[in-house]
Structures are given as structure tokens and as C-alpha cells.
Amino acid sequence: GEEVAQTPKHLVRGEGQKAKLYCAPIKGHSYVFWYQQVLKNEFKFLISFQNENVFDETGMPKERFSAKCLPNSPCSLEIQATKLEDSAVYFCASSQSTVSTHGYTFGSGTRLTVV
Amino acid sequence: GENVEQHPSTLSVQEGDSAVIKCTYSDSASNYFPWYKQELGKGPQLIIDIRSNVGEKKDQRIAVTLNKTAKHFSLHITETQPEDSAVYFCAAMYSGGGADGLTFGKGTHLIIQP
Image (cartoon, rainbow over all chains, first blue to last red):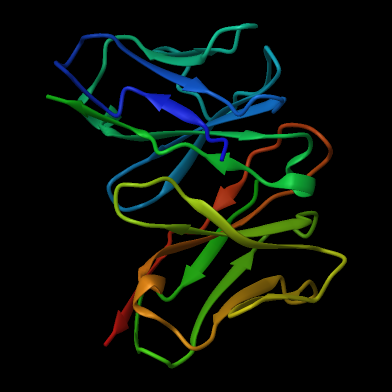
């Protein structure tokens, strides 16, 4: 079946380096969401998109995090000057129309380790 | 903003017994309540969801109940099997028709004892 494809699966960066994560939503899904899952399982909402437009970015640490969803390209989440506390699994999810109608489908995540 | 509390954090049950996980939410405007199952090294998988116009929903061995007045909802798994072992997350949101974000509980690690 169709799936949300996240790359890479694992990423190791030295503190201060840049990290870039990619997400290909399911074809036809208009909404994309990024979540950060830290060690104790907690999910933190980062940002959502409706097509290429940012819908809600209230969870984003804007000084270092940025995200894009451009037409005909995977969505991306970029972290400039990574810090140790950025170590987490980053999940992308997509939804067909409104979430309450169809729910989210999550990718399998990118594990970022900052050393 | 929304706040979701989930209990217990760990639940161990004998194979064949039932398991119940409970969540409460704070925002009375929330109208969509999904449950996700996350296995080790994988992304969360939607297993069942309920909307605020329904009090109960069942799908084979799993069921969800919602009490809007008390602002709590529960996941019930009957006849548990070893493959039910995983971390389960409840979530809540107000869906206004846009790309609204889910607020998750902190998860319940369900262990099925053979």
C-alpha cells in the first residue's frame, strides 16, 4: 500500500552542524505534519502545511528550524546549528483532506543523533 | 492550548485478558480523538478513532468510548494477544477543516504476558 516515505532513516551530526530531513507524503494528500518524538515517547508538534503553504508553525523553534513543502519535491525539515537536545526521532505525517475525516498516516521516522 | 493526560504509563496483562487505557483532555472544543499503536522502531499507526458526535466505536477486538461531559476517552482491547504488545498513544484535536495539529498523550507501554 501507499506510505509516507522519510529519508534518511538515521542521521548523525556533530553539534553545530546542519541536518536536513526529507518526507514524501502520500500522493494526493494535501496536508503534511512534522512531529518530534523525544526519548520519553513524547510527541511535540512542530509544523503543518496545506500543500506548499505553512498552516501552523507554533511548535517550531524558529531560530534554528525551518521547513518547506514545494511542488513536485519532497517536503523538508532543516535544522541549522544542531544542539544535543535536538536528538530525537522526527516523524512526518500526511492527510488526505481534513484530519478528522481521514486521519493521519505517519512515516517511519528519521532518527537524528547529535554528538 | 490542548493538554492530554494518559494513564497508565505501563500496563501488563495476561494473554487473553482485557486492557483498558484512559485519557483526559482539557479543551472542550476538541472533536477528534484518534488512538495510535507504535511498535519499536516504527511510526505510529492509527488503530481507531472517534469523533465527538459518537459515544462509542468498535472494530473487532478494539473499542473506544468517549465521554464529552467528563472530557475523557478510553481504549479497550479484548482477548489480548502477544502482537498487541506496543506503545499506545491517545490524541485529541479540534478539527476546523485545516491542517490542525494533534496533541498526544505520553503513551502507555502495553505488555502482554504469555
